[in-house]
Structures are given as C-alpha cells and as structure tokens.
Image (cartoon, rainbow, N blue to C red; front, top):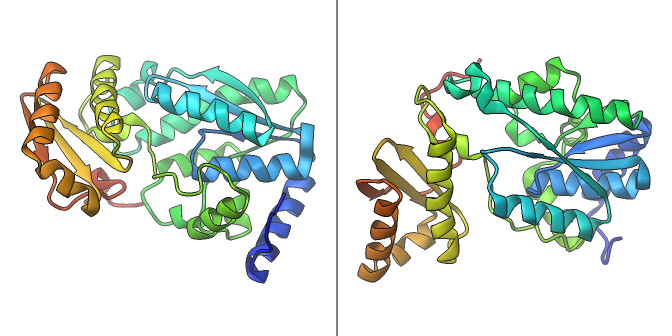
Length: 277
C-alpha cells in the first residue's frame, strides 16, 4: 500500500489503528468521501478486506457532486459501497435547526445503518471523528457515543494533519481536499431548514465551485448570501466581472443581496457564540 516509509510515530499510530479495526472483525464505515472517512475506509479495507463495508447516506443536505466523488473514491480504494437514504428533514428536531441539530442528523444516519449492519452480521459501525473535533460544538458526537458508534481515529489519536500526511503517501485524492460540512450548516441556528432552501444554497455553492474555488461557504441569511473564502481566494472576487457574475447568478437563485465576509472562511463560523456543553 505504502510507496514510502512513514515517520515512526505515524507508523505506530497506523499500526494501532489496524489492530483496533481487526479487533472489530467486521465494520461498516460511515462514508462521506471526506478526508477523514476516506482515510478510515482505506485503513479498514487494508485491515479487513471484504469484511469492511462503506455506506454513504444520500440526503437533501448532501450535494450530488459529493455523492459522485464518494462513489469514485470507494472504487479507487476497492471497498464495497452501499448507499442509504436518510430523512433528517422529516425530524422536527433537525428541521427547526436548534443548536444541537447535528444530534438528530447523526441519530438518523446511525438508525439507518443499523439494519445494514444486521443484514451483513456486522457488529461495529465506525465513523471518522478525529481528536481535533473533541471540545468543539459537536452534538453529533454525543449521538454517536449514545448509540455505541466507534471512533477509532480518536482512539489512536490520529490528528487531521497526520491523516492528511498519510493520505498523501497513500495517494488518496482527498489528502488535500478542503473541509466540507453538510449544507444545513449554512443556516443560522433557529432558521428553519427546508428542501427548497438547501437547493438554493447548493446551487449557489455549485456556482462558486464551477468558478474553480474550492474552500468556501455560502452562509444563508434570508435574502442575503454571505460568502466566506480563504484569504488567497478573496482577491479573485475583486474583479468587477467575477463579482458581477456571482451577484447576477445569486439573484436568479433568490438572493437580493450578496456579500463577502471580510473575516474569510472559517469552519463552523455559525457556531461562534454557541456554548459547548
């Protein structure tokens, strides 16, 4: 698998991860195609072969481009992949968008993974939570803990930077993939989430993606779209032509105002001010 040797500390953590996964004997990997779940799926495939299964949830908050990318990545890894439909928006606790919205999302996901685990006689479901997540506002992790879902990357203390480093050695296409969160994270807490609004945000972000921008968020504030970009990308929007194209397109989607956040992109910016419990 490896084309070059890892630094000893990383190799030790990786060996511990393999040992952890083999102890489970069979696993289902909750697989989004992001950096962490891809790394975990690759490790599970290496450790368990056909006893590892990746399952991707299809929902209104998961862009089609991400779904297609996940399918291609699974094919590259060689891990078996199945999909399951989740209906988070049917849950009032999710659609009303409280500060613990992710608790309901993860509960719905893991509820849908249970029958698949039973079908294949798999005793353990794992997901890609990492030590970097601990201490942040992550109600989804509370749901996972309550439901007995395992987080082996936390257990062996593999940090995001280390996961990217090993992923690069493994030549995984996600090694430098920008962070991604579900589309529902674009809405301020308390603003009700609907399929129509999710499609609106998805279309806005797809437009930025088609411009070649990779790390961004379109935060939805009613008829105002607030764009977050990394510092090096902001200069691209200073062009009158690009600004005009974005503004025109966003207005066709229903936004009356389009703004650029001067603080730039930051993960979970709508969590600012939320107290972690």
